[in-house]
Structure formats: C-alpha cells, structure tokens
Length: 206
Image (cartoon, rainbow, N blue to C red; front, side, top):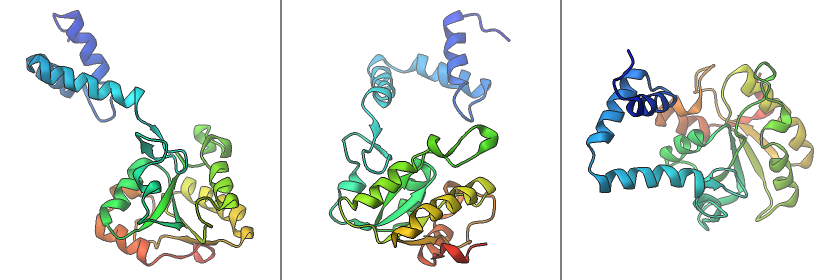
C-alpha cells in the first residue's frame, strides 16, 4: 500500500532497490533512520556519500581502496610474485578471512558471459596480462585462478590460461573443494582455505 508520506515512500522505494532488500525491510530501515538523532544520521549519510566520492579501484589489482594502491598491494609483507585472480571484491574478502593466503590479487570485476552481454573487454583481463608482462612491482611466478565453479567461470579461466601460459608463468586453480556452481563468497572459510592450499595445475582441471 502507498504510504501517507510521499517523502517516506520515496525513501522506501530507493532502499528497496538495494540487493536483498524488500519493501518491508526498506520500510523498517526508513523508519529507523527517521528516529535516529541528527548527528548519527549525518554520519550515516556522509559515510554512504563517501563510497561514491572517495572510494575507488586500486590502480594495480582493481580492489576497493581509499588510495592509489590498496593496503594489500602496498604491503611489504605480501608475496607480489603470487597473484590470485578472482571475480569480485567479495571473493577477496572471503579468501582474506581464511588467513591462509599471503599473495596479492587481481579482481576481474565479472566473468565472461555472452548471455549477459559480458565479453572479454568488459572485465579486467587486459590489465592482468599487462601486469604480468611488466613484472611490476615483481615478476609474477604463479597465477591462481580462483573463479566460480560455473560454466562462465570455467570459460573465463580457460581464456586467461591460454593468454598467460605461453609467458612461462605457472597457472594453477583452486582445488574443487568448492562445490560446482558455487561462488567463493558463499564457501566456508575452512573449505576455501584448503582449496587454496591444495591448488592444482590448471591443465589438470577438466
């Protein structure tokens, strides 16, 4: 039903556009924000606005960052010669939560999916190739393909392997402890950690 306040209705409509948020949840959020004191509300609005104006992609790996290089890429404690290729930022967070990986990342921002109109040029594959070719800040010795165990993920992994294998870089894939058809962000930490630790040469996946 339409709300008696047009402004409240507009706020609910906007909140309901968020993933996983229905009309009832959106109304609950809007009513909560209405009751929040002005200082907390201002902080909330400022934090959300900053996402659009102050958060951007890392120049090297395309993960989110407040600076030119993200904390992972700029950390002297990370193994720059080991690059884990993932679909999205959620996958980076999932792997980091395992506390078992000390390399760096490359976020594709999607996977090849002709049905959805996503081609090779629509995701960050070219920058991955350039990164390996330049060897900056260190020569890449191994690329781990940690992509979804879906047809689109496998297609993307196959294409990347074909592009970088001739460069003499070792290409591996996470072990199939992650169920076929699953995204990394939904895998439990123990399973994901084991999948990374027991990664196998990409050519053996099939």
